[in-house]
Length: 267
Ligand code: S5P
Image (cartoon, rainbow, N blue to C red; front, top):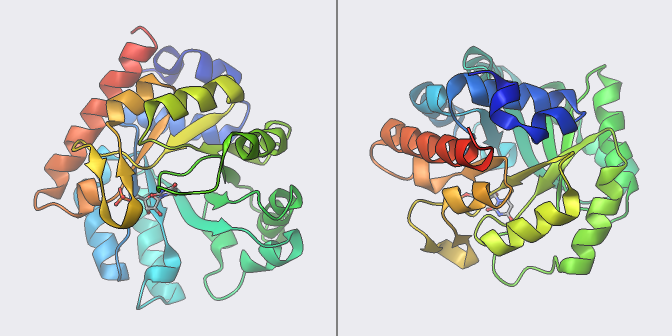
């Protein structure tokens, strides 16, 4: 279906072209799922993307947990993402000073050359966003930053006043496409949406069709509740890669997310 009709005010209010690219892909494929592909080898990553690619709208990686990284092997993952029309999102959670973050966009993984989106903490100061953008500019690319405004893990230190500072940094920046919110709590997502307004995206990890506590402090809410509360993309990891029938699970998350968005926007 057409992205404009599906996304309503989010489509008309988000200025960032990458946000529109995500919304178009989501509308065409009928899914708001960003796959958290937390696999330990490039081969496993590519297999997973080939299996669930039709049911997802973006691909999130942690390149530094892959055991067998090489520039050539990683290119096979980039190619697979392209084949499935997926924005490639490296969840690097940059947190250093701006200049170092710029250089960390290069380095052995050369994130700047293949990632469309990266995550960053706001803890070191607002200049981290410019540092990351400078990293992309060094290879004549542009990308979008998702700032961590909340987290899904229990005991995290991102309280309400910290969230306010994150949004103050992100709302004026052409490089910030949106925020990571806590998908395990619909109340927190709704509070974040209230603060962000309509002009930027909220992507939420901490979602699972089986709600409750996950491993090592992770918490899960229902994807439908996160989207109804104002999330625009559900980040799903073990709910898809950790089950036997991965394509079937991905299709279920796709359907739940898409139906919730249609309900939210009154389609
Ligand atoms: O607060 C957060 C932020 C992120 S980006 N909580 C998270 O869990 N994440 C990421 O989402 C985390 O790094 C992992 O890749 C994914 C959640 O995976 P799951 O297996 O718990 O669904």
